[in-house]
Length: 164
Image (cartoon, rainbow, N blue to C red; front, side, top):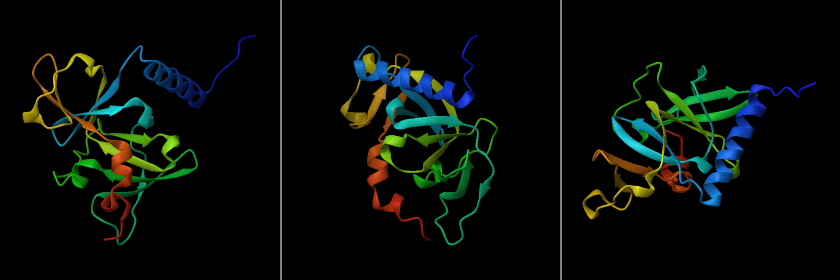
């Protein structure tokens, strides 16, 4: 009899395998996302899960970029609209919006709302230029991608102070 996995176990196994490949150096992949019309790269080791936004419960007297709290399988996550946090408008509100749950290793129940997920990207061959800044990359088509530093975000005082 074959062992049956539930969806959560399957996602965790897949995520663990991808992170193992990333750590071993055999593949340098990041998740490509779009925030306020800009392309961003997020290290796979910083993401625990990607999902469609569930219903949110508003948090009174919080900053405008904190959309509320989401219940994901019994765990509460503070949901940040990354476009609003970066002072670049608001998330589109379309069906393509996704939540990036911050990986458990960071010990933060935070979820980052992005406009859309663009898929896995390998930026090893991409070029950097001083004009694009230290976190800017150009892909093979010349499109600009920026690196989203999740650990750095979690250390920012503004991000940690949600009270409006």
